[in-house]
Image 1: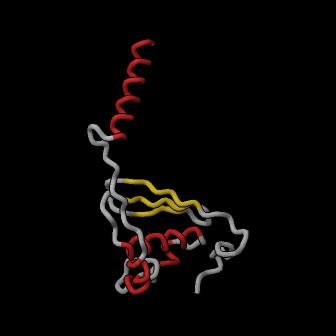
Image 2: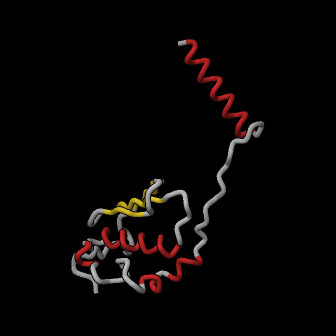
Image 3: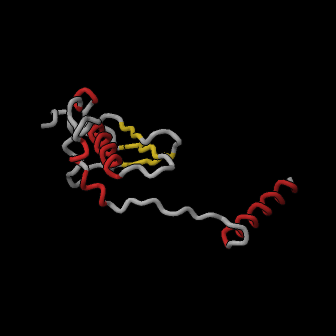
Length: 129
């Protein structure tokens, strides 16, 4: 059972929208959310994080938006990295969360030609200044 500080309005009609920001970093995958806030920040690195681990991080940050502190989550493998946490997030392994291949601008490609044209225009503007 969750403490009374939990926000009961997250799943009701008319609940304020939840804002999720994704930041890319070279560091370890992590998240951040303030208590009772509507914003979660996920920090992802260039490597594909296991989907069950990502679901666990999101769940932990959602708990913060509901008002739970680390002290209130302590001892629960639903929120903390305790043995057996994986059993709660096995459903996430099947999610279609695969990384899209990057669109590289190879020399001579349409994207590369457009990029070079843009750069030339910028250089001409700088020369005229």
